[in-house]
Amino acid sequence: MSAILAERVARTLCEQWEPPRVTGPRGTTDTPLRELSRWAARLRPQDVPCRVLKLAASQVLSQIASIRAGLAHPLGRKLVAAFGHPMQRDPRTAAGVFAALGSWLNLDDTAYAGHLSNSTVAVPLAFAYARKLDGLSLLTAVVAANECAARITASATLGPLRGQSAVHTHLAGAVAGRLHSDRAPAHQWENAFGLAFAMPNWPLMRAFLASDARLFNTFTPVRTAMDACDAAAAGLRGAPDIIEHQDGFLARFATVPLPQAVAKGLGSRWHTDTLSFKMHPGGPGIDAAVDCASEIHRAIGPLRPRDVAEIVVEASLYTLFAGERAAQYVNGPGSPLGALVLDVPYPVATTLMTGEFSVDDFSSPRLDDPGRWELARRVRLEHDTSMTRELFLSDAPFGEAVREAGPEAVPWLRGFGGDELVDLVGNLGAAGQDFSRSTKATGARVTVRLTDGRTVTRGRLIPVGAAGPDTRSRHSEMVREKFLAVGGSQQVADTVGALHRMRPRGVRRWIEAAFLD
View 1 (cartoon, rainbow, N blue to C red):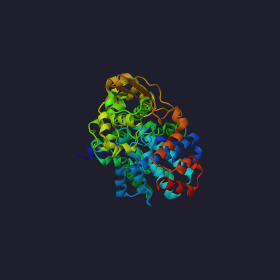
View 2: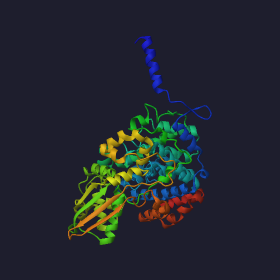
View 3: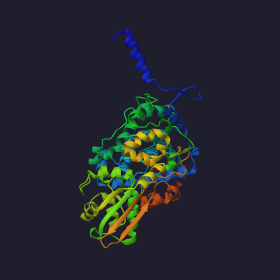
View 4: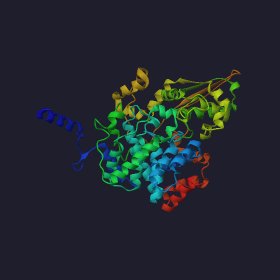
């Protein structure tokens, strides 16, 4: 190679790796990750609105309920046999076990954007216990983790990975949850984020749906994040522009990159306001369908297969998309759990028969009931275009990202639902500045046609527990009910409202009471 050509190649490579220069307040080069790191490292309880801290307290109790449910399931017990109980001495390993147990039954809480709690609660819980933090410090670490994970996830929301498959959420949530608990300086956050996102996880859907690998969908990224935090503390450096660089995270993980979402509205636009609390296990749209089936059960009593001619579940394109992927793997009691938690017919049939749907319905002997499967075969899914429109009008899981992208969202919309979806969504207006009135409209309508000629229909646009007016006013009682339903301590449920006033010893005792019964 000639000297002139070599010089040109070297200059080209340097130009490719040169980060975008945005001059900060002190003349430094800012990136979205650096701005986020500075803000999160300095976040203190007095900076967080009271309503947000209250949501975080409910989030902690709700995710503890999810972890308890995972512990009680046979697969959860196998995970503990492999890696130990979450209440163990090493907080790094405890954080991974907490994360795994709370995620794989789809009983974990979500927000715009991402299934946050698997890392943003799990990691602060482990480190609050180990570092002897007080209650207010625990809650502030949860909020800091929420805000970092949600923003980075939002930047890649218009991409190929969504929901629980967007496991990169937990790289961000785990780094932030640990470093806020450790009171780490901002430069350490920046390096830990940069190192964690150097090799972001990309799950293979075959493994995700057809095997027990779903147990690792948060365990693996949380462990990666723990290593990144240790490396940053030792002085290793990450690329500060790893999110937005042309050879970085968004270039691979986003169809329509939204790097501006990473630092937008810090301190005024709280993604924690968008929390939705999972009251039933299962994937997108199952919540509303189960809510409707429960109402039908209360209205006409338990149904048997011979009573039912047909069951129609109308839902958004999102619910149908997940359901169709899962249906390829669901064929009765032996179906892999990774697919079963995304299936709509089985939980709807179960709820019509029993009046409720819980994690126990995902294991023997309930899962082996042939009557449930016979009734499930009578369930048919249909697309409701108005529900798809409402889904995109709400903030989570996609609406705000589409508004943020504007016309540039069209390629992603077309890839997700074709030209029909592009036309249906149309112009959603401008992106919001405040999430205090956030909604998540993952609706469903269930119609049961009985063999005696009667037809019973129930519909719901916002599921019980999803972001919306009802959840904002009742989230504390909702998650209390969820926690008690999985055998949680009455004393723990009664005192979560005082978590922000607990001293370190009280927090440790509260966490022990939540898990060691």
